[in-house]
Length: 203
Image 1 (spheres, rainbow, N blue to C red):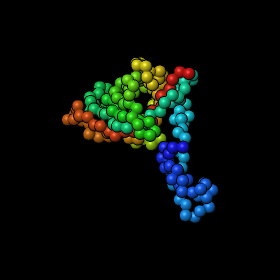
Image 2 (tube, rainbow, N blue to C red; image 1 turned 135 degrees about the horizontal axis):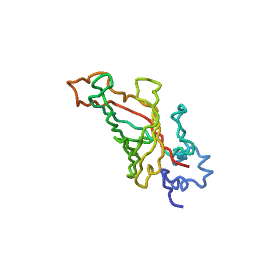
Image 3 (cartoon, helix red, strand yellow; image 1 turned 90 degrees about the horizontal axis):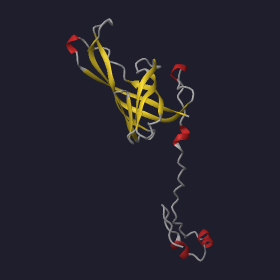
Image 4 (cartoon, rainbow, N blue to C red; image 1 turned 135 degrees about the vertical axis):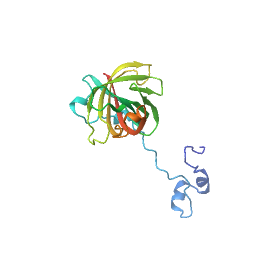
């Protein structure tokens, strides 16, 4: 029999040097040359690990939808100093959109998230959303948690059937607390941001 591949060295020379395998076992001078590497652990199916986040009732996906994908977003939330009419302060930081990369749990890039709000997968499929519900994050220094409904999709890939999205576990992303006045109209601030996104489809 030929030498085995896959990380194990051949045991043929050892067998040839001994009359039998039993002799190798009983001869203190005999050397076992097979690799002692443990067998690889089975790869877990990531879909089996998908669990919906614990959220308030107002942030839950509608009945009849099932969790299809989870992604981690890391990037920035973009704000611009703009004039406002009839809302107290004449100027304020207004949200322009996100610029984030989307990755899976192992850090592999899945796509990106940008103004719209739009999520685009590497396969070209897209979903454009509309915020339905906002809820303060457990830490008020972080951006709000959101329930978003899909108002348009395109392509045939992983995001083409998305009907709802949850944005939770936010870190950062809140608008600046200062620096916007009449002398800074048009200025932009890019605030570091992270979040988890859960994508749902109709069953």
